[in-house]
Image 1: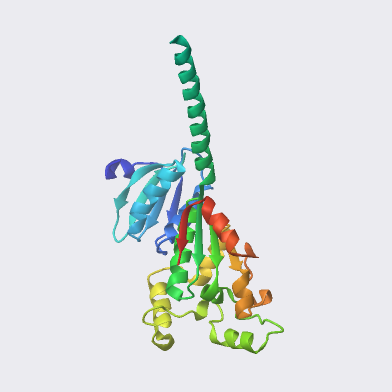
Image 2: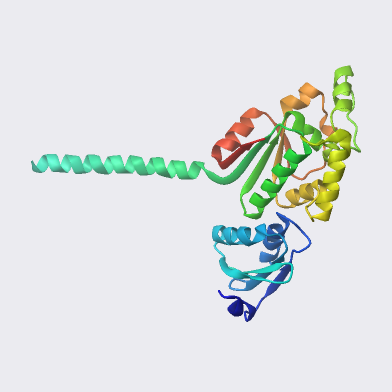
Length: 83
Length: 188
């Protein structure tokens, strides 16, 4: 998805993992995914560059849909939809 | 001619059946599981192990860690004391690190300066501390098996090990069996 399309998306849960390095963001995403419903969109805020590559792989394995990422000032947001 | 055709077809089907059974067996025998045998007691190697183990557990892979030799030092609880040790066991106990926060670095240890600097850096870079990693590992159901033979060899006592929710004691066979059914195996 494009950055514009991502910014207009309704997010059911926002996970702020900016205060933690690898594998922290993944652990926080795993914990949060249990709290949302199937089809809900979750965004993960991270300052750890590896997260951008790791979350899509995690989604692929778990069957969730990876939507894309958007750069912010000093961090980025990764979007995914729960299966 | 007709007869021959029938026989070959039948044979072919039987062959296919056996082959399918074999592939099914292979698929079943490899679980989504990570087995790591940890022999090193260096801070960096224990850290690498825990980071990979946590990442795997976050991906819902079953994780089984087998601690042996020098790695067992990382599982000692500094607040606990083993009872009834002989002279050699006491010496081992004194010379080996007492717990995960007393581990040395495999490089740049510099008489303990290295690990201190590393811990400072980790905090600054928001990397989980070993204490936090073990806590999360427990919550994620990561299993730790301690090598019984090393325990005896080095004179460690079970009562001086950390409180960890999924801790057990076993031998090399357990690791081999676990590793054999895992899709990922490591030794460090």
